[in-house]
Image (tube, rainbow, N blue to C red):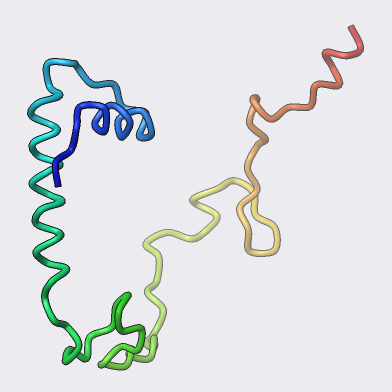
Length: 106
């Protein structure tokens, strides 16, 4: 599949990435080769595979049970934050999230 310069510009715009116009031929070529490779991979017959994935949502090997002793922290939780309540860290409100009420009073 051939990627055009306009395709590269559109992808860069969607990704919010600035690109130099001089890089367009290189990027178009790289993206075209990636899509060509993906087309080859899409032709591989995976129907006999028992691995999970988009074409086979049922995985072949079951997930193991998540078990074991908890790993202790090197420091007490109170070391990481000065204030805790109900097992949660209490942190100061960010200045960018302050209420605008003080600005409305002036």
